[in-house]
Length: 532
Image (cartoon, helix red, strand yellow):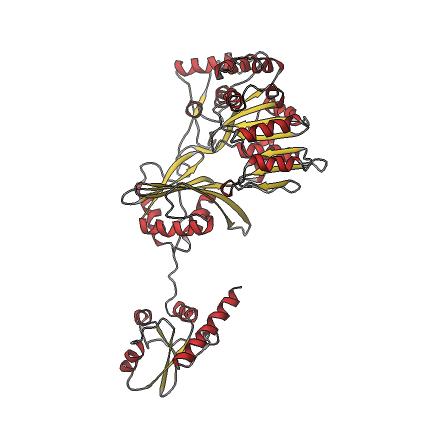
């Protein structure tokens, strides 16, 4: 394809040379010839769009192209009056190839981005200078590669009056990385717009998708999927690049940080041939990783599994994965009705966004399909309450859902730097309250001589956290919960459902987080922050 384009350019240049009465030369045959140094300066070659090509004892031949100014020929003849001056017409690509030899691009040393502490202005300045030196063609590749290396989940570009602030979200926390000039950001926007099929001047919010092939130092490569969100602001177009990076090694229910009890509840729900399992939580709470872990657990030769995703974030062998292009008018509901005719055993619906999708998914869960999906809600009881509000008082509702899992991600303390301490009475009382209210039969930790841990610091890890683990609550739809859901009262509050779930043995996200803090996995402050 590239060769065909170049061939067409050379033919076009030959035709233009014939019209102008100038001899034509195929620069591809001349490019390996030695350069004529000292004839013209590099600035002159750029300004006049001319290059010295050949020289013998009496003749000096120059290459010009279709964009060379008309006065260049006369200017060159006046400068070299003591020799015969000749001109050959070469293509624009040929001229650029010669200029790359006469003026080789300066090698830019791209420093690795390091997450800076809030007051580390030097680190931010250093990265800002690096970004300013990165070629416009390479800046997007550089930023995505660096974000992937840092295990960042998002790159944020926020336009201010005098600059564009860039931050990366690592382990759930936004860190300032650099400041971009508006000119450099404009170049970056153009690269993103082309790859994600969006506009840099759209007056409304946009969503786009793109992929990027990343090759590590070990030579191994992987495809990174990204979702692009843009919105116009007072000083330009803000953008968030969400890196949909899935680590295949952690797609395992045994590696998600589940307790034995939590894993048993999950496996029990997955063992049924029908019913709906819903994962709830905000964006970035790890729902997709949990869903994929369930799919991996279910993926066997005797099952037909179909997923509907917007977009497909990770490819599974043996699973039919169908992208849902919501920007193009696709809906989960329409695609779901179509795939149900394909007789699947398991269906994954990326997200329940509307009443139509909710009703179709619930109906599928009642007619011999195991349905997995996500839903936006603050907690498991809140998800039940919201779902009931969406579909109305439907007697089939309580029979379709089997398990609701609400989850968040908390940062894991770095074992090499974490510091132990004795909590004060106020914290001890809060922890005791959470532990003492655990369901009967639950093995409660001994709080005598309670020791907690807080993040430490090191030059390698100034924040004291490394990675994230989920905390969760699992609401099983037991007979007692079904009785509550079948109550004819139209409005069933989240508080009522929460009390019923707790009485039925549910361990809350907050309690799960407290238990992980007692184990030294995370800090109690992190649990308070994430669970509110």
